[in-house]
Image (cartoon, each protein chain N blue to C red):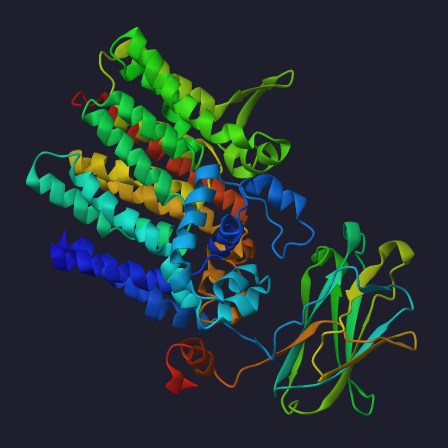
Length: 400
Length: 192
């Protein structure tokens, strides 16, 4: 097992160093202001937009800023003196040609590696049998999907994903209030874990506990967000495309009224659990909520990491779903790769050479003989159907 | 589980060592240099009889295309945009046309033409025009004072600008393998 762990780490280090998505540079540039004593990054970036080399707003929640900024402060002796000027370099070609880019990427992705490996150990705690523990550990470490999500796209989602996993482990161990608290903390990095809050009402044993469970994450998130309450924060983080996209798809029913598909799916899950189940399984519910969202919304590839550890637990438990899950994972990966965004595909290789920018994206290639949006629709429809089957399959299983 | 470990290990090795080479085989033309940086407010209008002219010395052989950033505000220009390439004796060598409806405001547009094999070190001049466009269908050509010396001056209606339009020349590589070599040469110095 130790040898396999070493192999898993080596594979991750290789991908970390050789694949670069510009988002990691952008949000680390923003987090670098923490070292300079900036507290409210949202208003700082908007107020200083004209003079800053990178104009993007900070779209994550405050804990992301503090944790990344804090990590940069600790790691700055290793990162070296050229790091800040690399972050601030707006020249997309000269930034990837920087001879220290490998070092920067390895160091910036190191916290992700630590959380990723810890998640593998955490997953083992969801099982009692040694065989199942080992299976969960191996599937997490040796599935290509999470390696690509974490180390190619290099986004921060692994932090809230890890905390969400901790929260659900606490729920499993019947430490509901502690789990609820950790879920609130996870929401302080990215908003999505707060989607589970209404469902905490279902797992509380009595009304007092139910109300406490629902309140805790909201209060924790409120405390995190309150110091930043401003127009700049609302505009940058709360109303950013990624935050609102979850609930954007709707079915018009006339007279300007719309059924919000994601919300309707969540409400359906809530009511069916409340009506037909004596005891709810938080983990199955969470996986179902996320699958319903992915099934019916235009998702960012990074979102797929949110569900990954929970899917591992479910397929270890119900191995007959393995091929369905594998097919769905391939589809879920294929859809964002067809977006009209070269940093989803060809330009991820820019560390090797900026010449890859000359290649057409899969979107452009497909456009020559078929409508790429239609193809996305076809794949997404199949994914939606597979997701519904999976949700139905896991929810009908009685064991918790 | 062994199959999964093998498959993922091979997948990662493929991503790192094989995929860049395979993708490199798909590259048809390579740029001589990067596009010089420019500001979007430093621009000149092109329409009707207004033509921009730009001199340069080709840095590589097999000159095959010229890429340039063009402004097409509100996508109003749907007329022909022409690039004419002349040699040092002002003889028209190549002509390449695009329609304004094929690009959006600020797009980097490539004008392809039949390859000029012995282009390295030779002087050329290209012009950009949109003769059928009226003042409402203007396209913008940017200019920058930060251009390298091999890019000569930009000239518009006999006015010589302090700088050049930020363009890129593209060249047909000698072979596909030479591109693959180039891709790995950053990590394997003996390939340089």
